[in-house]
Image 1 (cartoon, rainbow, N blue to C red):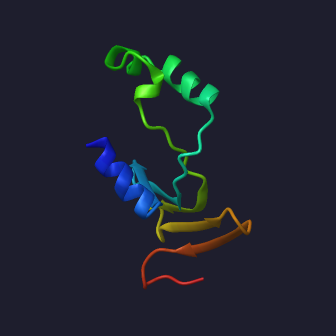
Image 2: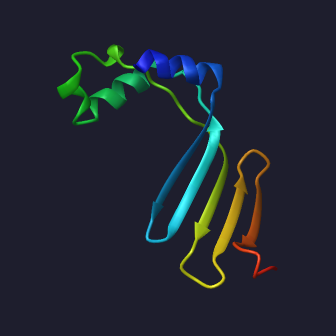
Length: 104
């Protein structure tokens, strides 16, 4: 199954991750790279309490990095809800509001 996922990601390396809690969400976009140094792979394996219980060696896993190119921050707690867009390539930050009832 991991090879099927690996094939998919190497065909289209663009990834979005979303995390949310307490009406705040963060979405990160970037392109996956499988260029991970051996000492970093070893460190990840050795410093994760679960992986050594599941696998005998660190090199049995596929490792990747996700350099974040863009990040969106939504806070739905205030009215109007807050939206910030971070372009980490250009260094630009955009502020805005969520919804058509509110504008800058």
